[in-house]
Image (cartoon, rainbow, N blue to C red):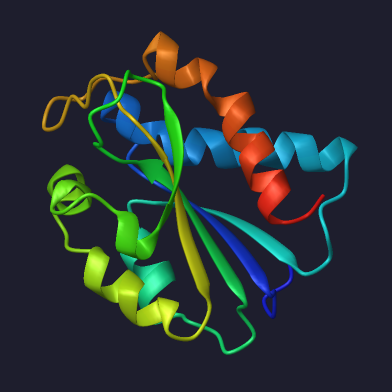
Amino acid sequence: MPYDAEILVVGCGNVLFKDDGFGPAVIEALEEYSKEQKLPENTMILDAGTGAPHFIFTLPNESWKKLIVVDIVEFGAEPGTLRKFQVEELPEGSYENVHSWPVSQPLHDLAKNCEVMVIGCQPEFVSAPDVELGLTKNVEESIPNAIKMILKEIEV
């Protein structure tokens, strides 16, 4: 895993809370894909799970040129709908509410030094605080398209 990567793809979320596990599930599928088709040498993929704030906001690297965050985003679409958001396009308050930690401003700060985007999936159900494993059908079925979006962004 190249720690001086220019492109960082980070899956965020908690697998214990149903659709909140979308980001880690996409990273797992992308890791499987990368066993067959090599990703560019300048790309690092990371399942940050619930540690995403630590990875994204405390370890910025001057070599990063692009940060792709993969996560659920509440944007009022049908469950499983994917959308690429630039930082300034994230729905007001929606990204904070799902995670209980504010991320919009730190993402804005990072965007001053590198390209930052969020590949967001509309969740159907986030079970927090109750533990419920597994993604809903619509969210799970969106994983292949999320990978296609990521591959396009990393120019594979």
